[in-house]
Image (tube, rainbow over all chains, first blue to last red; front, side, top):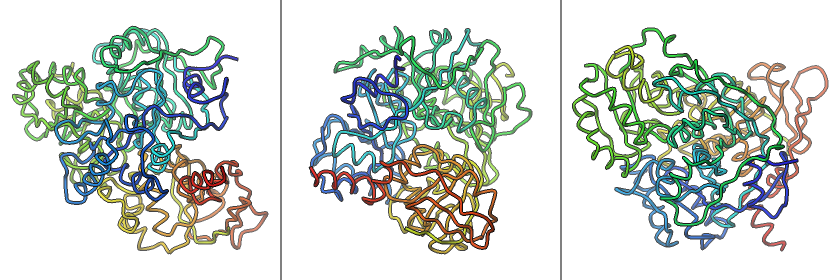
Length: 419
Length: 166
């Protein structure tokens, strides 16, 4: 029997000729990633196991993005520990300060992760890189420590669920809406332990930013990874960024799938996930009158230049409603500069937006946009759990950037066509 | 190993933000993390629980973030064992990697009420409900590789043990 793209990438990183779902394998990793929250534990575990030198100084990446710019003494201390470790190990990829961006936007942009790679990251949204046709999955700090030491990680080969997306998308519908719709249908554990492979003729309409939003939220359905077959759009993105070789894999025609789900996207409207679970999804026309206190446009899901352009399109010559704090977070320094060059900052500032430096910031309730009890935020982020962006009594609604921008203007959750 | 303790029941999809909110992730000190364990699911949890207690949860326990701070907080708080209908993937890995015993049981949640004492034999995977009628429950066996991890005291010690034996 043939193999899926996920099985092939895993297999090529082992000494096996063929692998099947359920097998336990040890595989070589191309990139192992940590951040300012997860890497300190990994460093401590690495040292505790007698580790002195990391397996490859070009394959371990630290991005200090979560609490940047350092929000307090404790977070600064964690970053200091990592900085000293990175310097001591002569790590090639260490990002903080003005070079730092949200890790899952930064790594693809900088060509650090490439098609065909096997990537682990001590961050659950590491699955984002599946957009490039890579196997990428989130792990814990101890897994990261083990990979820093050995260059390997253990995996149970996952079964693959196939999602066949058909048809062109309506106006204002993006990759974010496709994945929210899927999570709404299968639930937050609908793909638990499984690979999610996205195919169908809709894919050709999806930008890399759309694909990254979709792969990013595979974990919100419980998935191990989300993955796309690389095509010309992938090639155009990767070839100008890669500084090492990469491989395009695709599933065999006779590969085995645990399920196949056909989705007609032509009738889909922008989606909003209500508190406090990403599967609590409604179409924008079904939302009703929900007043908001904050609109947050950014994160590893939707902080890319394409997302900011959509937001600017809607915010042009408009202002955020008087009682709404509009926070826009370009995900990387490159995106920040590009947005500035294109004049988007002018539009955002005219709309009374706060333009934040690249950071994970308030997405995880870290800092720079925390909610008080009873406050509501519409966010282009990926999680709306209890207390996710602040007080346990606050609420987060998830949407695409067009809806978040329109909602900022309307003062309530609204689609762009309602303005 | 036998874990015996009072049970605390939680529902489905208890996420890692509920287990340990991100506002406390500017440290990895187990004591500090334990002080806020389960805070957003039950603000009084740490006041009520005692060391050795057991968490019994529904589907998809530990979903969300990859933060190992979640199993660290639970372990440091003194939770001796977690029995859920199912676990989210990264939490499942993290628990074994750091040697926190977890079991999947579809039945237990419905058979006990909160506070009831249970006894878990982590080697054989059997659960006895104190004062409960009927046969002991048998939970899904832990896969052999995970048993090795638990036996060696977690992933890093397992790697060190393997290195020594080569």
